[in-house]
Structure formats: C-alpha cells, structure tokens
Length: 294
Length: 184
Image (cartoon, rainbow over all chains, first blue to last red; front, top):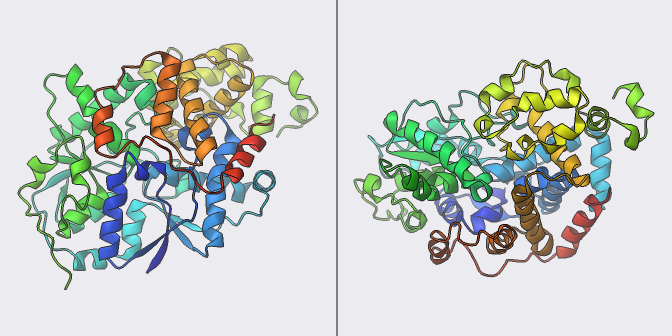
C-alpha cells in the first residue's frame, strides 16, 4: 500500500524517534510511505499567531506538491502540522476569496481535495486486523493513559475527528497491543504547547497536572501522538522535578512506539533510547528481541 | 459582513468592524457567558479573562484589547472555540488581535513576538524550522542565555538538535510566500 507522508520539521529533529518508529512499523506492515518531495514547514504556531495568510499559504504549498506527486492521501503524524493542513484546506474550500488570495500568492491553482490522515486514523486506515496479525507480544497488564491533547480534536467542525470532549479512538488502537488504557480526566487538556521556551512555567504547570492525574488514575506511562505533547511531557519532567520534590518519572511513549513494542521490535530501532525519561522501568518486563518476519 | 462596515475605509473602522470586514469574525456573537474563560487552561496566567477581551472590543476599547497580555498568553488550544455556545471562534479572535496589534506596533509581550520572529526567520531562510537557530536568536533577544542549558547538550547528543539547518531546494517559493503575505 502506497501512502503520502509529510513528516514535518519536528520529526526530523526533536521528535526523530516518532519518525523512526513510524517508518519501522509501517515497513513491517507493508505500507510504503512516500515522502512529499521538497516539503517545507507548515508555519506552526508562529505563522497562525502572527500572519493568517502565511499560515494558510505554507501548508497549501505542501498540499499542492503532494497532489502533483499523484498522492491521494497524506499521512501527517505531527498533530500540530495535521491541524494546520486541515485548517488551511477547510478555509480555502469554504471561502472562494481566500482561495483566490492564496492562489495568487502561490501562483498556482489549489487542489485541496487530498485526504489528510492523522496518526490514529492511519492505524484505522490500514486496519485493525493488519495490526493484530503482526502482533508478537501481548502487553497485557501495561496500564497507560491515552493523551490526545488539543490539535487532533479541535476545532471539531474542521478536523471532524472523534469526540472533542470524550475521545476513544486512541484507546482502541492501544487495546490491540494488549495494553490497558485507564480512565482519566486530562486526555484533552492542553500541555502548554509552544509556550515551552517562552513561558516554561506555564508548560511546567499544565504538564505536571496532566502527569499527576495520569499517575493518580493508575497509569504507568502516557501515550501521545504529537511531538509537542511529547517534548513537553517528557523533557519538561526535568523542570517539574525541580519544583516538585515528590515528582516521580512518568515515561511518555508515542503511539507508534507502543505498537512497535507489541510487534516485538527492538527498542533502539523504535528510538526509545532517545527519550529523556527512561522507558526501561515500565518496559523491561516485555522482552525486546526482534522477531523476524515469517 | 454588515453593510455599514463595507463603506468605511479601514482607518475609520473600529477594531470590531476591522475584525469583521477582514476576518469575518463578528464580535457581537459573543453574549458574555464566560464559558471560554471557565475552561481556559491558561486563564490563571492572564490578568484579563478571554471573554473580557471580547467585551473590550465590543465596547470599543480597542487600545486596551490590543494591549492586553491575554492575546499573547493564549496557548491556541482551541478549548474555548470548541465549547462556545455561540460558535464564536475565540481562539481565532485572539490570533487576529495579535496580527492587528503587530501591524500597529503594539507588542505587549515581546518575548512571544521574538520567539515567533526567530521561528519564522528560519522557515523563511531554509524552508524548514531550525531549532538551533531559533533558540540562539530567541535567547539573544531575551538575554536569558542560560535558560535550558542543562537540556541542550543532551538534545545535541541524542541528535535532536542539529548545528546546521536542512534547507529545502525551492527556497525561492518560500521567499515569495513570505514576501507576498507580509504586504499590508
């Protein structure tokens, strides 16, 4: 199966284990990820917070590149990029004058009918049976908190994905691995997102609340599908530990890593060694030998 | 768009009229229930609650609205827009107010603006984000060089931060996008 792939900037740097685990598991699952040629940044928060037209033109350049490459679906694992693409597509499809304006900026017509797929939808798209068929390890007893954050779900009228207040799609993927999603109250709360560098105290406060609730409800790890959520929840635990002497480490795994572990893939191949919070204490009970394809 | 806003020139418009005519956001949709502020995860970091910024614009207190730190503290999590019973996109309203404040040179939170500038500078030059350049430029702008210095070496050794940017081939296309969207 061929499918378009837009990794986005984070996955080439701070979230390289997300990219690494995605490429590894989808090659196992027989999915051929076709990277958008010469893709560029979506503009992220800095574009949409300061310049509306720029925030639409940057994703739409990439949508046009993907279309020209003949791609019909575009898998975007970064929740933030995914959101910017879906919003840009929505805006030009809704408003002919905005479309004209962006077409003038790009000097090309926009064909925004490509299907954009987030990380959870990607698993749904290739099929739960395919994931189950490739499972080599049952993660029974591994209690995890499914954390969606903001940008996969909101705004609901635009992303049209799951329930914005009580989502459950990630839990369904988690259950395929044998791991057990817990019930908790913070799965759609914000981690502070792009305030990480400018207002670290905001991120520390919000991320601490998320981690504390996950632990209180019995989670051993938090599962995410967003590089910003990951860096705030994983890396910023160093800062949380400085303000809270009682803080205990909470491993944060990408959904792709969790699925990879259930496939019996090597932890380094999945990039788990690149996290700030060691995942070994919660994963050591699941043996990690690579299972060769039969 | 209401007819009376269409005939006014931009200079004579109130902020509410400008927001409606340029961005299609009608501030009068908001009836001040306060649900946005109740669910806002960063409300405690703000002096003025989100719904009160909308009220300032409704009352024509444009300067106060554009000067409020609230528009810069908004994390863009979209919880407010999702829950608004009037379908008023308050998160977009916050973005629009920042954009207008920038155009008028009213930048209350220079730290946030410096971050955005540093981020977009790298995108404009390389076509992609470049964390090392972003953090270097941002830190130089804040004079807070030692913040996060404990995390930096580990990021580098894990290969999460590179010393040189990855440049896309068609940087001309990106330059063009930046030039054309920066025009007033």
